[in-house]
Amino acid sequence: GREQMAPGAVLLRGRASGCGAALLDVIAGIAAEAPFRRMVTPGGFTMSVAMTNCGAAGWVTDRRGYRYAAQDPQTGRPWPAMPDVFARLAQEAAAEAGYPGFRPDVCLINRYEPGAKMALHQDKDERDFASPIVSVSLGLPAVFRFGGARRADPVVKYPLRHGDVVVWGGESRLWFHGIDALKPGAHPLAGPVRFNLTFRKAL
Ligand code: MD3
Ligand code: FE
Image (cartoon, rainbow, N blue to C red; front, side, top):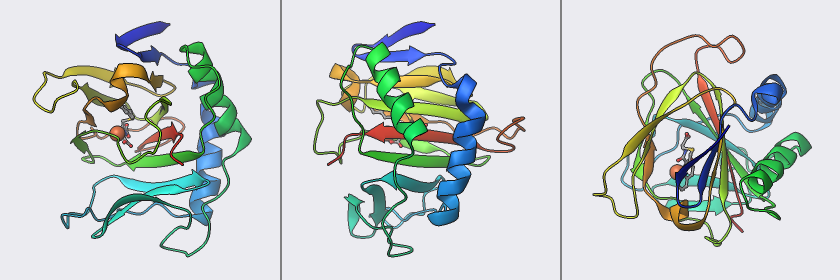
């Protein structure tokens, strides 16, 4: 099914369920090269979500700020290359949602353990706000909070489950969003965690 969540934001329920096992295998391979780690925000807090990246650059945070970096600061090596199965899925989902020609150059991989959450925020570290963002949910379900252009705007909650793909473009590209604390559970393929892939054109 295709559901409009907001102007420019399209939810493709279960779009990635057929390739979920393959995506999880690829995530494990990436994490063997660039391990999941909990990074520190500029304010000095350690994030509850563990992250890694693949592609031409990766999203990182430390006391100096948020940015995209071509090397993994933990290993000093370039991030693993964007796998074909990732790039194809993001490109096809974007086209289905009305954004033909989307070619992501980076993918942030988030790993949520029980209790991990992401506070309400905007994604604005990218150079190009005209391109959409594609997100893929895998493993345990989570509650996604979607607000508006201003932090004080009311939020609507959506469950995001294994295989759900969301394409965020147009007006909603800069809207506030977050993830509630993950409830414990066991997913048959992913185990006790949730993964989220976010594909962006950042460079
Ligand atoms: C709405 N990740 O990494 S994905 C993030 O599930 C992030 O891990 C969440 O927010 C997660 O920045 C949510 C959904 C998402 C991603 C980007 C958006 C929603 C968005 C950009 C604009 C509006
Ligand atoms: Fe975000």
